[in-house]
Image (cartoon, rainbow, N blue to C red; front, side):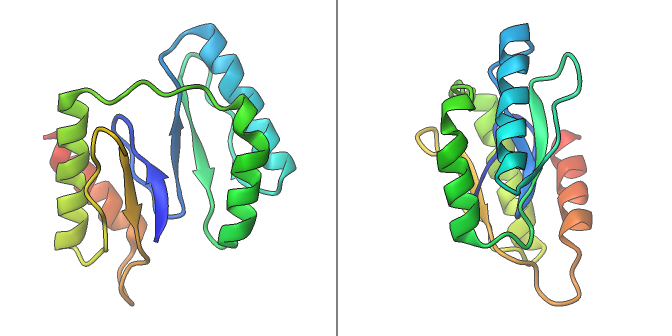
Length: 140
């Protein structure tokens, strides 16, 4: 299972969003440096859009040791995350529960470890579609 960060409202299984600290310019600049470093390590990471404090990371098909090495190499650029609020943590837990109802192995996040670990979807299931449906369900 891969550990995927899930701070406000995102979900990943091999891909997802890396959060910043807020929409402050210095956090945005730091996330740009982090995404650039990850790309230099061969990881598909998009620069955050202007004014946003997150970016997409796609680690599908990347060997676990390569991903871990890239994250370690680039850790100096990763902004410190703020702990999730109680509301955010509850949303993450609801998302994890939705994923499990749809056949995806997903761990429950905690305040100390606010990531959701997800496994591969069962044959014939589309993780992106399940993720979108769960996000829509939780956002209602």
